[in-house]
Length: 604
Ligand SMILES: Cc1cc2nc3c(=O)[nH]c(=O)nc-3n(C[C@H](O)[C@H](O)[C@H](O)COP(=O)(O)OP(=O)(O)OC[C@H]3O[C@@H](n4cnc5c(N)ncnc54)[C@H](O)[C@@H]3O)c2cc1C
Image (cartoon, rainbow, N blue to C red; front, side, top):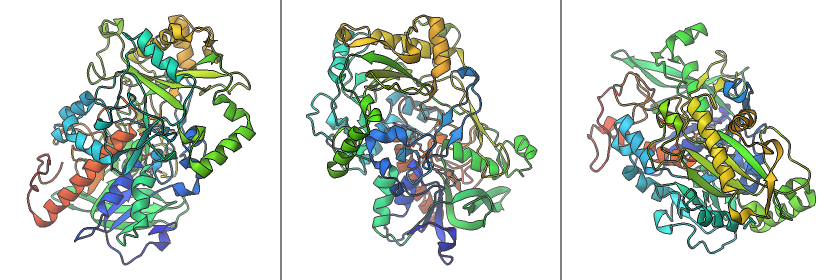
């Protein structure tokens, strides 16, 4: 059942599992663990935000850009001042709603470069995170469906690479744009630098192609719509979901041989309380995301002992890497003025047009709003002989893994300057994918209702600014292809006249912001490692009862858009949890065919 107030939670029910955070990963976990079996498990899911169903706009793909920042679906964080961005602080959106960031994101669907999954396997010592091991999850998660406009997608995707019956509907762009054919033409005119890639989700992403989005029937697919709503609609008596309620602390419930057990959670709807507490009988699964997870661990005494002592927080386990190693990607929307008579720029300026499009979407889930504003994507790398390699090693997972991205859209956008009231535009957002900078999440105070200090460390290293500058120059080369003659009028807005390296660097630092992809603040390392926060089976080091399942556990930020990776992670995590539960309860040993990494009985 769905509850909106903690006082409604049945007091006589014992929960096997308590899941903290009804976001992208948390909903997968709650839905999977509460599946009907001969021995059903009771699951309580606690989400800080409201229901996604309270927000009609969340379902409409094109308006994804309006769901954050500064909305009721967003935590509305601001970063600390960024030295790499000329000391600017930036909005730092994170979903605070059922579905979490999958309810407010820009819908791009990627499942990875094979090299980086293999790197996850090698740095965690768990073959279960390798590309060959995660491929079956990708197929079982995806449901490839026709685009909203039902156009012929031959040659735009390799259907055989995709699943057809999973919970997450994914589709290609569902509305034509005037730049589609021109971008494809560049892949012929400048094919050496910008080759066409028929399917960027094959494991080898490099090239320019058509992106998939988490959109089905012209409507957003999130973990709330794909996993939680079906589970709730099935009226599972063993699944309880509590919304509008923040978990304020994880609580130690015992210890054995000096190893603490964490099975308790404290929660409240506001700083003034009342505060409630429930214990799980089997596990607490922390899925509060890359910002929320380390914040809650530290509030609970799991983190750097010295730093916590300064805030008066008593240490349960000294884990200095909690909140460290934050990896984030940087974006710059570079805009060109174009010779077009209509572009989606018009939608923001013309209320009548917007209302017509909303009407069309409401009746048939078709039209311009049935698709995201992103038309194509390109993935690329700096040349192997780049001068930066004399001072920095390549941070990417390998030569087939992109270091930067182009996102194409037929519209003006900027993080720092308002939109123009006339004219038509296109943009290439240049995104730095594999930064060498490392940021952090730290507590501002011991009050769980205080926002944490978020430092994504954007453009904070020589490699990062070099690669971003090269990406912008590559975008300029892309736009110099013959096909744009007469169509492109010139660089626009703050990008106008920006040509030379020094100008590009200044422009980059003045205009960049986040791609919204923070990861790695509770990163996995091998069992027994003296660094890291979580083990390869996602249990938290040095304790029993607690696991982390969300984007915070990735050892490196995914080189592509991460929501697909998070679904994969959560699906495997649900299997690991179920398998461990069998092992612990009945002492069966490893179930036949189950690929469980060997670990000692204490899971340190
Ligand atoms: C604006 C934006 C655009 C993006 N665009 C894309 C894109 O196009 N493609 C893509 O692949 N990725 C995109 N991403 C990133 C992607 O959505 C995230 O990486 C992914 O969804 C993270 O999943 P998660 O489970 O780790 O965290 P989340 O989905 O953020 O879930 C965390 C949940 O925990 C809840 N929570 C936190 N603290 C507490 C607490 N103390 N108590 C209770 N609940 C709590 C939160 O409210 C939230 O619901 C975007 C993200 C944003 C914000």
